[in-house]
Length: 219
Image (cartoon, rainbow, N blue to C red; front, side, top):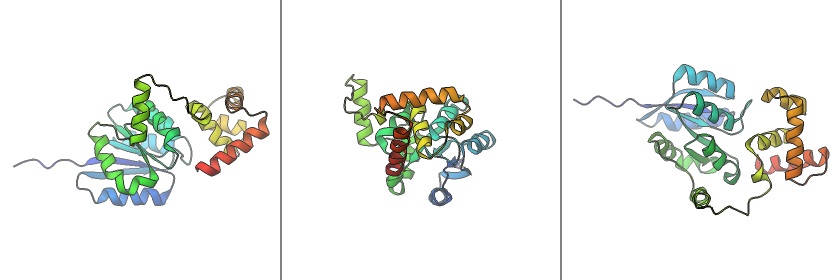
């Protein structure tokens, strides 16, 4: 008599309760998966990962506090056997490659999550990558040395610069950003200067307007 297979344990990290509920409902219908916890912030997720030892963590980019990319890096560093799949509403060209470089095995846009999320989860649980055809082509071009000259200035920002740019768009001051990221105000100001230079922005007011406009368009 064969031993029943133990369902894969899945932790859901998203700051929207309705999104977490929808994902949990779909997972509950699968015989090979079960939800072992839910979190809305990076700190909550880190605690739950240590407590529940999930096989897979579904991670959103924007969290109530903290950041999805930094959480993926933490999981890769501290829990190398735990797999991560980023499920986010942010545009793929900005975050998919960043997520993969940080240690995630897949990236799924929320607009496609209803149709593909279970397939994506099973793919990642097998240790395989799950990305769209566009992301796959970009990765192949990079591997072949075909540098994408069409990248926008926003896409050229580092992970940290993009995170700070998003927080500026949320109206946070340099001091508040420094506190949330556990960095000095001087470091934040240096990042702000680098962002202005890369985006060809002349001053703090232009930076703030550009960040708010970008956030309104990208969520």
